[in-house]
Image 1 (cartoon, helix red, strand yellow):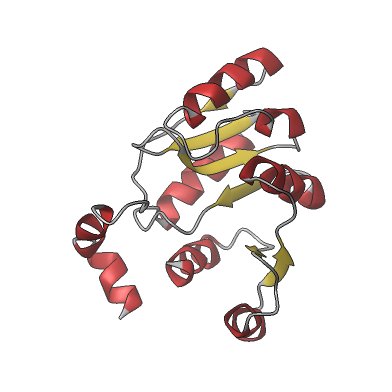
Image 2 (cartoon, helix red, strand yellow; image 1 turned 180 degrees about the horizontal axis):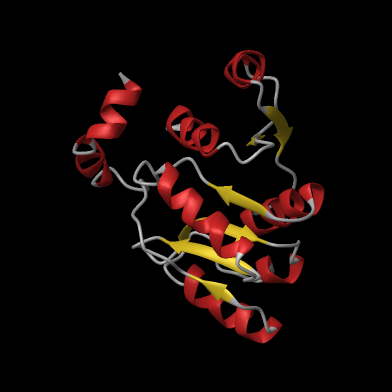
Amino acid sequence: MILNALNNAIRIDSGRITLWCSPDTRHHFFRALHAHCGVKVSRQLGPDLGTRMAHAFAVHGGPMLLIGTDCPALQTAHLATAANVLRDGRDAVFIPAEDGGYVLVGLRQPQPLLFENIDWGSEQVMAQTRERLDGLGLRWAEPLILWDVDRPSDLARLATLEDFTEWSS
């Protein structure tokens, strides 16, 4: 699934691509991606997902899309749509997941408060994030909803994705 996500990011040709790795960047797979695909590899920092995402945005600075690797339904066209939302002046863009989280967050500039005190891994993540977006006065869009792979039952759905099975074989 990492290769699928990376392939989509490369195809959008948006410039700098960073693979945020955990627990570190020394794994041979990450080093191979850096050597063969030219992607930058950086270590995720922070005790929870929110802190790690806030750190990635802070390091990068201005406009950035951040995706997980557990959403094989996310395609290059979705990334292009999200990038256009930011180009059109919105502060943020999200692609919510069917399970209540989200599979993509894009920000025009870092917003560290956006990621604080969220119940990561729960079905309340996107709802809590919407409340935070409102509280911060940010303008955002949610162009579509997708699904991600979190449970064994999601694997049957994964097997139906023709594009994914072609890429991963």
